[in-house]
Length: 338
View 1 (tube, helix red, strand yellow):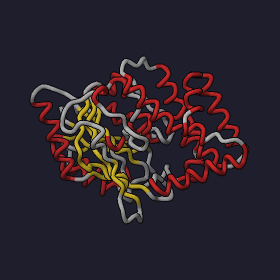
View 2 (view 1 turned 45 degrees about the horizontal axis):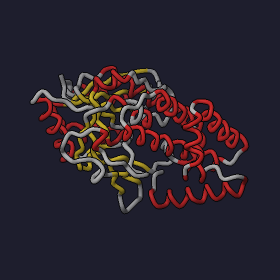
View 3 (view 1 turned 90 degrees about the vertical axis):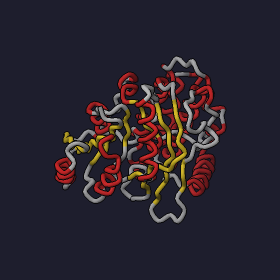
View 4 (view 1 turned 30 degrees about the vertical axis):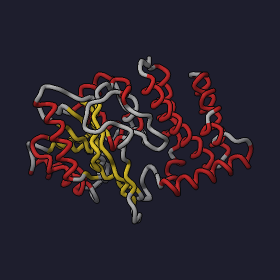
């Protein structure tokens, strides 16, 4: 069994996938790299096959009809033989030193017959054209280099969320969770970082800048105009997160509080994108989102509406929407998240 399976969803990735693959190769025989060609129409399949032929004990090329990012991640999980599982998008890469430290840490647990449910590390917003690269670091909120659970995890403040880029799950835990990501849907990385959490009991944090999350291309899914264009997919993810939260029987208050906070920020993003869309249909969908939350879980709906983010994104009238949009522009300028 491999120590770590790394799934690399690839769709028309010929321009940048080799940079990603080369950053993963230093993992050597302890890893398997699953290049999931998701129905690409360029040279992605050819490049994947060439690397699989050159590194047959490390790299596997998997080809499928187009199913979207979620479908590619599902395929990666289904084909993973490693004890642990990581997703690295084909336009991103990892840093070699932290990569080795992560593998050594996982190996130590394996050698003594122990395991983790989730290993957390830092990631860098590698924003195109930015002179300063923001680092998402979890120091001071998680204990470092020791096993901990939700009870000993400090409350993460707004802006400090576990994202796909920072997470390595135990593969079997993903199977136990029953998570199957929706196909042909963007923004499912939020579900990947959210839905399995109730199954996570043993966590470990390494304060290393492992993952370089490339952001800033005009065609990226997190580009604001593209998010507005694909708002139905954002809403699909948002609603599923609300359903997961509602059906979870929480036994740990820290986890419940964290999962609410994450859901709140995703709902806020959906609301702001709909406000900035500006068309009547967007405002109708915004109202429908609130009605969905109310019908699904009225206490959840009421909590969202009375807290600050819910208030700021639901100010009445056109003036209220302008205020909400202006606040978003300020926050985006400070944090630079798309």
